[in-house]
Length: 162
Length: 275
Image (cartoon, rainbow over all chains, first blue to last red):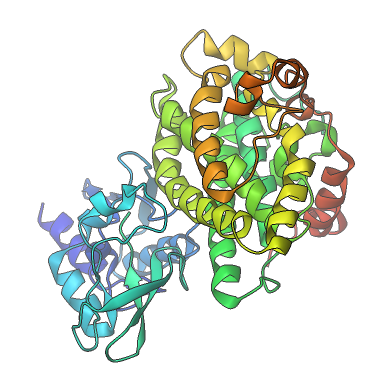
């Protein structure tokens, strides 16, 4: 148990390579850590199927654990239940805002079926205005949408619901 | 590499069919990267391509695992020739202009959403898990492509005409989405595969709604049976039973060969190359 807590704390130091302010733990993609004194198994779930960060994350986890003496590390990918932004930690959401990325709203927003519909207003991470508009639901990475603030005029990323 | 030799069961054929659908459309979309009409939409299509290629990877990995021999996701994607690909004809069609690319994505996403929705209930837990993940991604693809079909169909005279032309080019390939191949029929009875015939009604409803808003007339001639207009027009309904098929069994349009020639070039020229 103690060991497992140590591994969790090591994982806290591993950043998402595309949103480095978040650790893989903040992101909610680590589902389980199992260890029996010799072998370690880490169960991960991907954010998006094609997210290229996943390969980098797996390698970084391996390196970090190896540096701390864990040689037999098995990384298992599970797809179900599918990752949701609801698994992001509250601390992670605060870190995102401070970094200039609007954090995800609760994920019922994702299934909004109406076209050209207005989702719930997204708060500008810079000036905190809700007077913002969507530029594109697809942004610089699979997990982000592009918004602009109509008050401070700054564009910003929104970590979209999923 | 022959498709029939490495697999002695039906399931890998089905998994490959699904993987090929996702990879081929993902690759087609990726051809736009750096060429999109505006930066934001270039990025949007690249994101959709990435989702599809990601889905394809999970499916190829699963197919390789089922085969249980030296096959890998890479050898399946880069080492098979056109007659071994099991994708639907719709997804391999050339990009054409932006309107045709959008329409192809919309017609396929509308199908894929219903498809993954049902595949989530598959008795094969691996396929169900891949479907659960992919379904959430397709919601975004369908919304994006629906909005673009409306924007262009109900846009200027030029954009409307181009959408009608695209519809004319693509419609004949939509019927195949609802005609099960032999491997789908045999897996359907065991609750593993989705009954694609049952997807026609929800697909026509969705596509019909968007076409109505986009001011695009429901095509009479090919691929669909039950559009509102076709129902009113008995002659149209009779003609519409015809659909271009064959992709699911490896008989493709010439477009696929060109796509594979580019996509597989590196692995053909330098087998096993990594960088």
